Length: 435
Ligand code: SF4
Image (cartoon, rainbow, N blue to C red):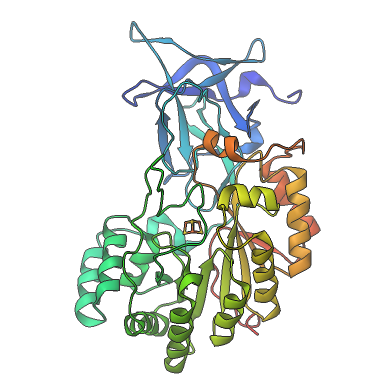
């Protein structure tokens, strides 16, 4: 911490139990890398992007930095407007395209709940009343810019789509996704542009700690409704063909937050792709998957898939197993799927669910470099993992490996893997990459 001028750091934020947010009169913002509470260097702070969100963490006192002593302190009580309150820590959720560098500094020991699934990020406030979050922008993409998702256009677009293009149970489901869950991909379907979703699966062969659509233990709420039916091939094909033919930078993707694992429906996916490609060669057909079944990945690829995005929380088997809790496959199957995908010429992406203090450990970075070199991976997404920070850390194996910081991790990957693209969003397959 020698090179940090504590007096220049932003002030700590806190909230009362009703969620009103205040800035502390003198304590400075702290952050956390894994379980380690640290000062957040100015170079890791950005003005909070406009479409970020602020949260308060009930019953979790904030931890601030005393600029005079350089010591961190848990703030259990504080006076606000003449009364003593028990303050709660405040966190931010960064706009898509930004990678979080620090977790919020909070004492989680006395709460009796787990936080819902968001990527909680350290946040403070400057002397000029500007919110500053801990992160950096890894990719800007117009196609996922929240400013381009104005719902005023959506309702008439849904009505027009349903009367003029296609209607059925899958369109009904995606209407709910667009209207109730504000899924950008579902909105794109009706706005007839960019990447649209093709959810197909009800079941899964993993039990991820942070699964968005299935939380059987009820520790926190699933944020998406899991698909409850199997769509017909005819409806999938009709939706996909229309989208691929009409949309600019068109992608259709199997594997969404509102379903299980699409590889469990590999027959349906294969048949659908064959029928789609009989009608149009335009656009990208993509599969987002856990990559658990290498033989099915190869079969789907040979039917005409263009790109694949395989999700991982770690390139280390023990960390992978602790998060995914695979039922009838193992880490090695996922590695095999990545190799096969690259080998058969799919544009191959890994969706790495990143978490400061785990993903930036040197052991992890070395494992990732090994993965990229062994497979020839094209693109690595650095996607903030949406999960209660303490819940995740409690369940990950311990390690003495030094965490070097998320920015440093990115820099090492860039210099060690010069052909690897780093970013945040699915890419339409470019001419020359598709083989
Ligand atoms: S692989 Fe996907 S659907 Fe399956 S448990 Fe994990 S997050 Fe949920």
